[in-house]
Length: 382
Image (cartoon, rainbow, N blue to C red; front, side, top):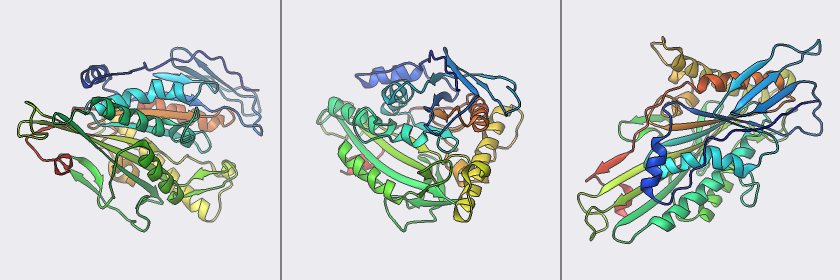
């Protein structure tokens, strides 16, 4: 039986009513990546004699048992830890809301769901479109448009929200909102950072419009059933919201010279899960997918190892499309939060995930407010 002694810790809840308070809250964000752990409830078919314990403040202890008796205990400390009994709202308030507040204040932010297959990453990020089971993405969208409605002032303060959705399947970048637009290249812009060239962007004016895009993308994203997961994601997916805001310095014209423009991005990343072949039973096409998934996650581990070693002269971002795309999120201009999803019944995979997440917590970023003065943005052309 899996034993859970739970007193989970929180990253801190932020609920700002103005841009100034959002900026103030964001100033408290550490320079390192924030990491939270979420334990998935056991499924009916799962039986385990291994122990996974969650305690305050953000402490997680794993005690594997290989059938010959308990092995060594592994203890980790994270910024937050959530037991199976804690719902979507608790995870969002503690983990995602600060990232959304940072985006509204002009910072780039990323929320990355990481873990083995079947650990609950997609449920955490997407969940249901409404109700108590809403995931991080629909809750973040609702918060952004509530802020726009509350803060917009005609002739003084304006907003524009754009959305894009891509997947990395077998090392090929595809636009999930434009079927057939595959093989996208990753380019670097000194002002805008890394981007997928040719990726479509959609102006969105309400949560309902965003939900429509999410549904369309979900129909295109590669998924399949395996022995470990009935609906396994076979690709890494990135849903990006670009948030533009302008504020007139002296009133009058909506976008006069001298106005301040801020353009920030919120990257919501649902990674495909790592797989062990003896567990997933992958063969044929599923096996080929598994090789690409595990290869890109291994490359991600190498990037994190290089960023935290203190001695590495080279960070291998270009070893995979995933690490290249996440270069700004890991060591760049971004406030990044990682949610490591685990399950007690998959202890070997869980220990591996916890070790990776513990290293990621030491990655240093250099986030800054993305502010422009006297430059045209897409917002001005509307």
